[in-house]
Length: 79
Image (tube, rainbow, N blue to C red):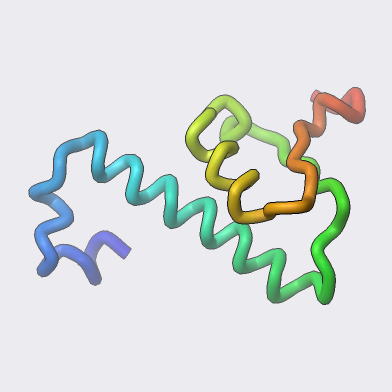
């Protein structure tokens, strides 16, 4: 991704803009994978791992998943 966008001066963006761009790419990639794998979106989607600590990533996932409730695996009692 970075290499393909380097001619668009990605490297000249501020570090905050670079991180926001890559976080957006991550959220969209996760959502696209769900769309390809699930004929219909589940009512609830559970995420785990370090990404849960990224409030912006979780906000973007909630936006993309729309009517699906985005939750943490901790809500299931899982670490």
